[in-house]
Image 1 (cartoon, rainbow, N blue to C red):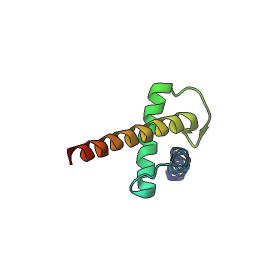
Image 2: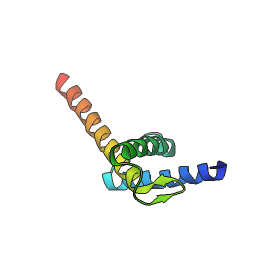
Image 3: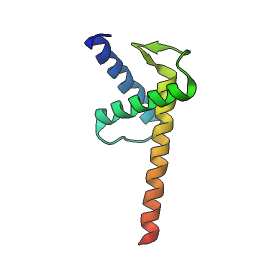
Image 4: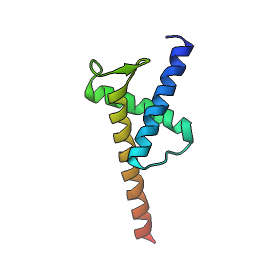
Length: 92
């Protein structure tokens, strides 16, 4: 994969995580850079848990695994941040 393939993979990842943001109603910090990080980590986790030998791919990005991995990662992060905020409120 050349530089154009790599850039296409990043664009596909950004689009997938953008859709995940809309579904989860969560805004990631750092904008598109945060999307790339969450997409790459979510894609790796999704492929590890769900396998990487099935499902559609675009420019080498497995769509379903990246979507599910990113969604789970965002929801877990949202839950953890909610727990931290709740604990801070109880301490005050």
